[in-house]
Image (cartoon, rainbow, N blue to C red; front, top):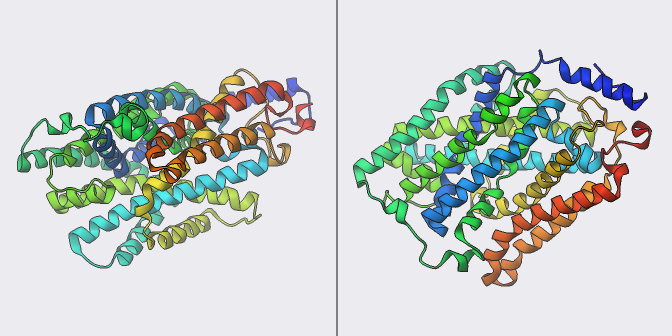
Length: 464
């Protein structure tokens, strides 16, 4: 059903209401969508970041920040997922509203590049695990990882993987539990992992309490909010409450962040000499458990990389069709994405993890704050829907672009404080993401009030 864009507002509202009521048949059932989304919970990066925060700020401070992170993620994604399901709105489509067509293309490209980065990074974990288990050149293992990962997001294989994910999840969870028990049996159980504290006061290193620095650190992966919108757009409207609560709500982050952090912290402070990095932790698991550890790593990274490969190819396609006017089959975009991923895996990208997280965190937190404020301010109002064509949107939406650019610029300046003065680095990394989000949302809210003509991003002809 298409929207009557040239008719009256009443016509648009009536047609839009009908669109919201039906047409659920082509959407994913709640079970398969939940399993597909929970595949992203198995990123080994989540094991690493929990350990890294505990090492930097102490276990207690890290756990406090983690609890606040889980609550914040659950609340924000409840709003974003409901909106995405009701409007069938992906990140690319929603960005047209807050940024305009051109701004949306920029956001889509950034999203694609971030997904590619994560695919490279998570794939590198499997490469290191293979090398730790069998030796051999890293480029060869990189090629093998890309070759077996690519078909997993294509057509029938992807549908098969939805079922396979149901088996991979307990394997991943069971494997991490086995790693904890194994490490304790070999090196002994103690409370060291719970009582660990940094040598210097966390407030000196972070410009604030450790729990706040931990919370800000997890803001670096607010890309999960954008992942949420793209996945939620596949759901049925009748399943909104289910997805808000179980699929995209706090329960998911208790597993993805809470459980993974527990494992990472325990292994880090139990296995002697283990390196606190994602590759170091993965290598430690393989060294400890042998082939079983390798299977756990492969299971976890296979699940998360289906999301990375899918989202990178989908957003490359959106950018290519909208900006470059290239129209080729979906499989071609998957192959292009895979080639880019393989070439990037030949670079020492793992070494730049923290820098990349900080920079992409600023870009993404600004976008998420603007998106959240827009949805809350436009509650109950009509004027946007995934069925509206690109040509009905403005080229630029000043409201969103100004808020995004200003907030991002301030966030990037904050990140550079450490370059200007090393003593200020902790202040920039802690307060940069927070200030970025607050500024982005506040500026957008002010512009939304003073410039109502740009609230929907639609052209004047459509609004009238």
